[in-house]
Image (tube, rainbow, N blue to C red):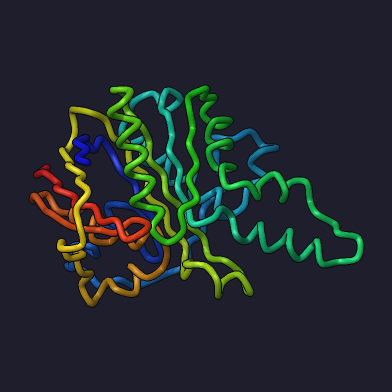
Length: 261
C-alpha cells in the first residue's frame, strides 16, 4: 500500500519543547533536549462549564490541535479529525478504579464521562461547534503510525483536509508500570491531497531497517507513543528531503518519504 498526501500544518509539544518552533532545533541536533514539566492551559475554545471538566490529558490534546489549526488558517470546524492514543486518559481510569475499590464506589460522573478514549474529539467538536466526522483509535505503543495511516486514508478518500491528533499523558501508579507513558506529549497535523509539503507513506517488509534515533534524543523517543515518532519529527523539522522507516502494530513497517519544504 502506498499513500501520497501533503502536510499543511503541524504542532508539537513535549517536556521541554513548548511548541514546534522550539522543538525544531532540538530535533535537528543543534540544541540539547532539556526536559521540563508540561502544564497545559484550560482550553479557551470551550464554554466555562466544559472547560472546568477537562483534565491535563484533554487540555494538552486540545491545545496542540488548536495550534495546528491556527497555523493552517482555515475553518477548523470543517475538519474531520482522527485522534490516536495509547488507551485514553489513564489518570481518569486510575481514579475510577480507585473509586470502585471503596465501600460506596463514589465514581464521579465527570470522571466517567472523560474515561472514554474518544472524549478528546467530543470536546473538540463542542469547542469548534463542529459536526464533522471524528475517529478515535486506541492502539498501544505504536498508535502514532496507525492513526496517521487512518488520517491519510480519510484525506485521500474524501479529497479534503483532515486533522490528525495524537496525545499521551503520564499514567499514575500502578498503571504506570503497565503503559508506555513516561511523559506528556502531543502532535497534531493537518494533511490533504495537495498544496503542502509532500509525503509518501508506503508499507514495507522487515528487510527495511527501522530508522535509528540519535543518542541525544533517545530518552525523548522513549517517553510515549507520540515521541516514538522522533525519526519522523526530525524529518519534518528539516527543510531537506528525507526517508525514514517506522513500525506500526504486528511488526508492520512503514516507509516515509518526506519531500523538501
